[in-house]
Length: 268
Image (cartoon, rainbow, N blue to C red):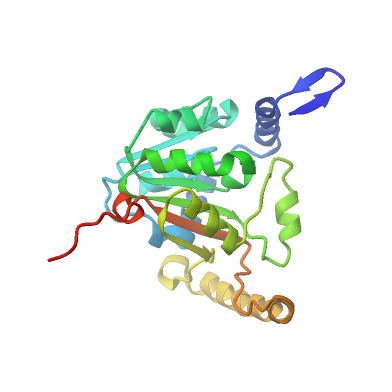
């Protein structure tokens, strides 16, 4: 909460003013831009989305609805998106209609839908959640997942050499994460089979064509070479030769009551 000469500005008001400013400052997405985002989703996240096209999916902080649209175009039938920003939901509804919903509180929405979703996604959202609320939000998300359901997060990676810029370019960013801290918070929230990996675009010549794929492969080689000094420092100063240094992290956790409560029946 922030004090001003006009009184108290609550966090909700601050976030909404930012969302409105962001929506006004960025060009309204075209159909081509929305489809382009879908291609990026496939390159980065394709292996993390359930194969079952009937899976119940919720996108928290869906914004303009890029990821919801991508999943619908891939044949997923039960996809929903929620956001607290009226301006962004207004845009999303132009493309997605009732597939997206304005909510006053993500936590309240999730609490009202227990054990309902097979996959919950937060892409570039969790870093906006204060530390005091982060674990509680994850626990509420876990409660909204069906048994065996999965949470997928994308967050800024503070081990990335230029992480300071990525962390602070957005005024509403509250936290940044490393592989270790993201694993810790997911585990503390009760998730099982937690994984945290660097987010890297796959190279697919059939999908992207020879020229574009060749450029990406060359760029990956250049990036790997540029990171060598940072990897040496990480090893020399902290003993971490295998630190993840991609710009973003992907974290996943599964709801598995059997594993969490150590009450799985023994196998005969």
